[in-house]
Image (cartoon, rainbow, N blue to C red; front, side, top):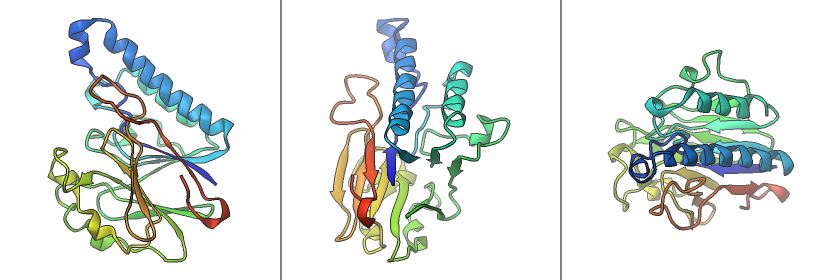
Length: 235
């Protein structure tokens, strides 16, 4: 099975600094970001990808969402119902998907919450996630229980406690996730690609933002392609 891991798309960012330089600039860049979202889904269709993991910050803020953009996001998901979308809210996704999908969340969209870990089985992989907040960030790891015999992907949005910014609710002590039978920790929040060993079994990976919004978002970025061929996760 093939899986795409993306995060930090920040669709519909206000780009107020760019507007000071070029009044039409924000609209051009916002449209380019939506185009990148569409191209990622086209890649998924053309390459037999079964599901797309969105590890937080699909959009930048509810207040800046254009109706036209909402419609494009909805169409991209509903018109590709052969692909499962796993959506975990980040620190910018401060609204429920039901406010975007007013007619009901599509059957190919799977969500998570902050009350505890939610797991889904898709083919040969178990996908587990929990939305972090100030109330649960210190204790969430103690609630994670995964079967050793499963191929386990865990989705989270946050950064290592050694990092800076992001708010206390999005700081994670990665050492607490060691020995939890995680094969691939699908992270969001850091805007450039990063892949490191979590423990002797698994890795944690940040894909970076899908496309940069300015010159300050440098480094590798895009999406990560995961493959479970042979009963092992590779990316």
